[in-house]
Length: 305
Image (cartoon, rainbow, N blue to C red; front, side, top):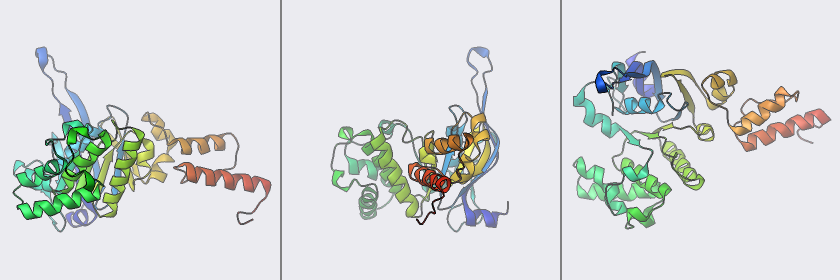
């Protein structure tokens, strides 16, 4: 790939990346190759979901894309806005710039809270990178507004719900003003209400032009993305829009994954002889419309009737 195209179209590019976890306890070699010669691109300003079964390597990939871990072989390059050259994660001198460009929110919100008061927690990261107090105040206020927690600025962090704590963690990332935020299964420990809040926040970030990467095992979350990367046994085996990925039932089954329930319902109807178009059916609304259209066609009723 030409660097010029990479920096214009993508914020992160992984090229032939591999990573092995090493465990030499008791003089036994228990190495585990988590990522195997994987290549992928994260489009700038888009919402990309990375899906895969447990142990597929998707969380390891997230850490490689964020620069938290360095690949054993291959290359991860981060392209800041306007930077044609890119920043390689294998040079530790680039760590600071990568951290400012790509932020990461983890699964357990309790492990990410460092202060007892909400606004103090959000201010922690910008304080540590030397931002002046007046600018920190502006960033904290703006970040809390973005995640819908302005009225909780002076609340005790330990009294918040799981979803609220996760939004505090997101606000802390936003206060650094990164160009990309990676969410590593950040909804996995939340109840349905908390997951909905985080998804709404993710979509609002994308609408603000921030690149979003979501590692998830919830297929209904992946349907909201612009692009999906399917990871299996350490490799990216399928990439495309939600419509393209979830229409590929055979590949998903081989990976131990299923399409969203609404998609499966329509696919089952088609398999049982109903003349129904399953393309683009990703949620209850689109499934209802597809079923209604099929029923009308069977009865000879026009769509505009």
